[in-house]
Image 1 (cartoon, rainbow, N blue to C red):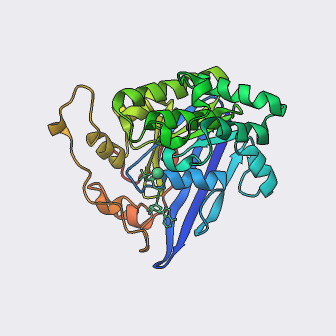
Image 2: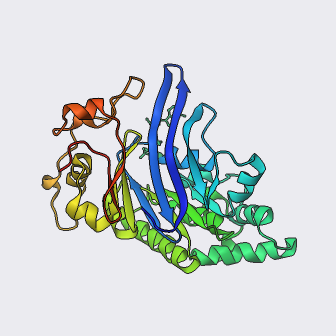
Length: 322
Ligand SMILES: Nc1ncnc2c1ncn2[C@@H]1O[C@H](COP(=O)(O)OP(=O)(O)OP(=O)(O)O)[C@@H](O)[C@H]1O
Ligand SMILES: [Mg+2]
């Protein structure tokens, strides 16, 4: 756990109302991010990484509902904050880079206009200074010829370029916390590294905390101070990257590591994680990994699951750890 928390997600449970009934997607999620810290949340597709972030920012879609929990940003509960106050925090102190920049950017506004929109809402700048500030912001994310790109629409830009514009929009007001949801999906490996280095560099320069969402444990280890492992809407283990790689205690974390390509390993060494994510429309046992776990004991299906401190910065939710 961070000693100087900026954001604390406490026992967050979220469900969606669907035609098939209520789906309990998040089950008592606990996460915390310190000032200036980078926390990576990892897990298979569908494990609740994005929903956690959407719920924290109050941008769940209409079918989603927070059933329980608190999200404290510097002690203030974002979930009960008046809408106007939350809106003014979003974009200014809290910013998000979405999973797909092409759909997250406004297709009928230029790159420059989209940055200006954020600055006009949240920064105390005179109108005539907005354009210059937007161009400066484009330069900061290392877009070449920013004065020309200011006029470009998303469809005129490459994926990497759109990603940079989205980072420029998100960072325009120097947020205290950036949520970066799969910020490099769909980009080639070289561009991935450039984008991640850029986020890291800007985070360090501005003392900004980062909530990085990724399914890539290798990327998480390279860029995050700590890693939180999620499975089917539950946080199962949290620790610094080196502890996750060398001394993970949760069977799921070990499985995830076994399925992650290593720099020196071969593809044949990879072992797929058995089974698939449980069907959350059905009632779930306390540990939602238990049906896929070869270390499952009775307690996993009968006793409530809680995330407990088991070492410095190391938390675990498991009844029969390694
Ligand atoms: N609007 C919705 N209605 C119903 N279920 C939803 C909705 N949005 C998300 N879910 C469900 O919530 C669960 C978590 O989804 P989420 O998008 O958070 O996963 P994720 O970990 O971000 O996955 P990915 O790596 O694919 O982005 C999934 O089972 C998903 O089907
Ligand atoms: Mg997602």
